[in-house]
Image 1 (cartoon, rainbow, N blue to C red):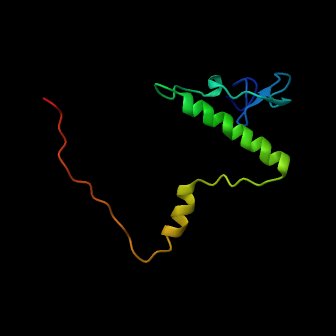
Image 2 (cartoon, rainbow, N blue to C red):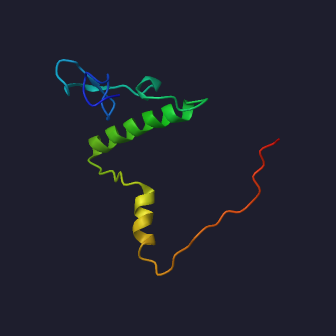
Length: 101
């Protein structure tokens, strides 16, 4: 995955780059397997790869139906509502940390 054909085979939307120019893509060809993930995702990447494919399918369906997808992270929406509260909540974690030796 890269910004152009010199950095990777697909762009951030999983479009397959042609290599003819930096950003030219093949129409209607999307790569959604594990090869587009730039680093290891853990022991069993099945769910991550599956979710990547689902995200592409949802984006294609939204494009076809004319839907608008809000890509704002839930934490950002939550932060807006939290900043309006008159109280501040703090969490303190206490406990024993055992090294095992």
